[in-house]
Length: 85
Image (cartoon, rainbow, N blue to C red):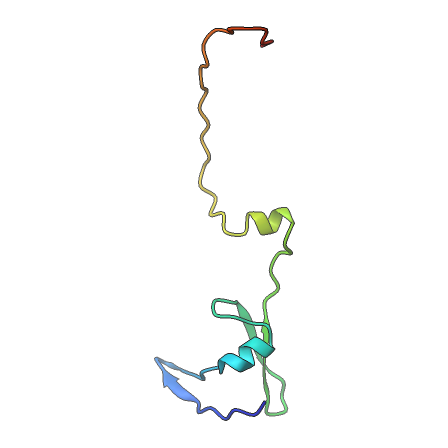
């Protein structure tokens, strides 16, 4: 894949648009966090920041902002059968 793009001014920085085909081939998507490094040989390397693996507690809680969770007791009334409390 060889898609030439132009470096453009973006606020006080510069930026490039990454073609959708390049993102797809790199298995990246909009919203991914990435590390950007210069390798010293005239190349810029972009690597996705690894996230928690699916199926782990870290993955399940990755979007949890830390709000306090409050519970409340529910009174179901007196037992009406053979329930054991």
